[in-house]
Picture 1 (cartoon, rainbow, N blue to C red):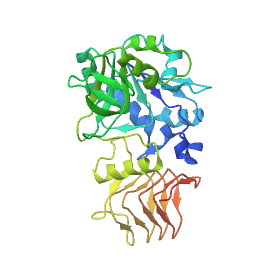
Picture 2: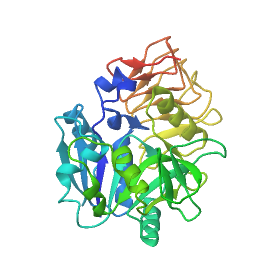
Picture 3: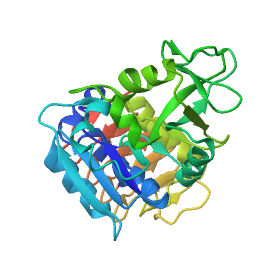
Picture 4: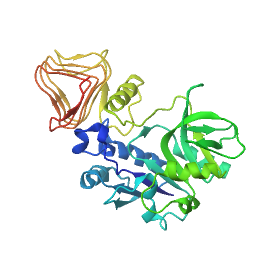
Amino acid sequence: MKAFVLAAGLGTRLRPLSLERPKPAWPLFDVPLAAHVLHALVAAGADDVVVNLHHLPGVMRGVLAPWVPAGVRVRWSLEEQILGTGGALGPWRRHLTSGPFFLANADTYQELDLADLAGYHRRHGALATLLLRPLAPGVDGPIEVDDTGRIVRFLARRAPGTRPGRTCEFCGVHLLEPEVLESLPDGPCCINADVHAALVARGAPLCGYLAPEGGFWSDLGTPQRYLGAHAELLALNRVPTLAPGRVVSGAEHDLGEGITVLGPSYLGPGARVEAGAVIGQSAVLGRGAVAEERSRVARSVLWEGARAAAGETVSGQVRSASGKTVGPD
């Protein structure tokens, strides 16, 4: 199976850190967001993956390349002009005609089994299947799905002769039949607004795979969501299996005398907490990061090699090794 990973965005809401590292290269527990997505696609059977690039393409490629699983071919699609989530597929039409293929955002994190989505897609004979999360009753959303799984409304477009269904939001993964490519307009376009909405309005069989209850998903598109995803996963004791570090808690840790851990926190390989430092709740110290003596780190993520200076309080921040931050609260 083939897949296309969308990694070309500018990450404007995450500046200034997105000026040194594109959002899909941001680490979630020491693992690039795009690598989490790539491994989920490979687990579902993808072994030939296109990744589009635009913003800081050399950084994006360098960060993701070491995480490519053995036996998986990755092709890089450099866009001089951003083509959008649909237009990105245009130069690869011929490559993607051999069968159904995944199209996935590189800057989201989800724990779901995409092989189940693929099975659902086949059973329903769908032209496209989208990973969706149901919204609470009474909450309006951009997508409606009927009792059979058919998408009956997409944005402002409704399938002919249908009634309102359950409202949902999109979770960043599509499984598409090659026929969808025939509906792509030339040039930059959005796969949702310019393709899926029109297909639904024509009555084409688009389906929604509803994420099972209890599954985790976040688009990590703002500093608050990025920090919140780390905090929630730590609280749930569901740090991703790819993460190379360890979780320490206030009840049980071996960091040395004079060090206080107030709640579940993550320490990457080589991370160091010095005497008198206090970490937690939800402190994340990436590979080689340091909380210097008497510092306090809470609800923050220190990237690889970043430091909290002696006596400093770091709260509600994301910090890189260069010292750039987003935050504080």
